[in-house]
Amino acid sequence: MAVEYRDIDLPGDRVAAAPDGRVSWINGWRTLGSPEDLKVAADGSVTLSAGADLSDPKPLGTLLLPQNEYHQEFTATVVPTDGVAAGIAVWANSSHHYSALVRRESGQLILRFRKRVQDLTVQEEHVLDSDEEVRLTIEAEASVYRFFADAGGKRTVVGEGAASLLSAENIAWFTNVNFMLAVVGTDTNKGSAVFSNVARNPRETVPPRPFTIPR
Image 1 (tube, helix red, strand yellow):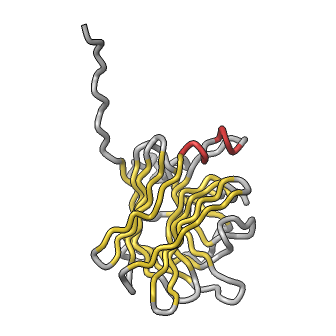
Image 2: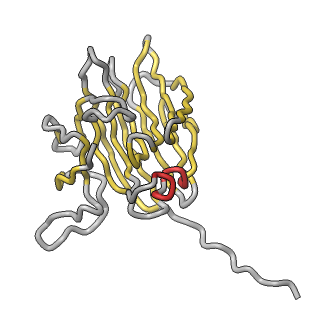
Image 3: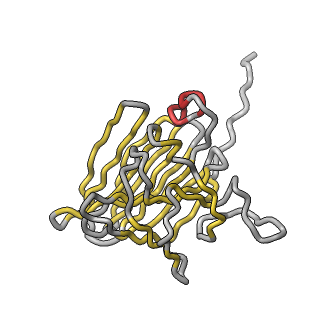
């Protein structure tokens, strides 16, 4: 599935626009499957309809924002709805991505953290202490992506994945890594989810200490 740049005016961009007001495709939001029913409210919240699983070549219910620095933080608050899984991901293509999606099940919020690299998939689940909204965060470093969830006043360390496994070196074709808002439905449920407080910001880094040779 090709990535389509659509010059979508959404929160999260912290970059200067071109003189004509457009944001560069290198920094701007783009889609997979071009969801025409995308809704953006006056407060900047985004309603995104569900699509296929992130490993599926079918149209996805997703929005992508390129990672344009090594040290960045991507955050979004999601209100899960019945029958769909919604959250954030680091996505290079359908066979190389890490995701943290939340679903409502039997009155509980279940967060599934999944790492997909080529034909290998590893996943684990966390039960969150909340029945309302969840704040999801990705901390990106040069060598690792770390995922966190804040819900019910408690932070859960969701998991992490090596940045090198999503690089062009391993994917075997030139690509860039994107932060993603994602909603996954089922064949019988094509629901939607609402995202708010979406942001992509640089992370402060500590400069390395100078190395000196002892005399």
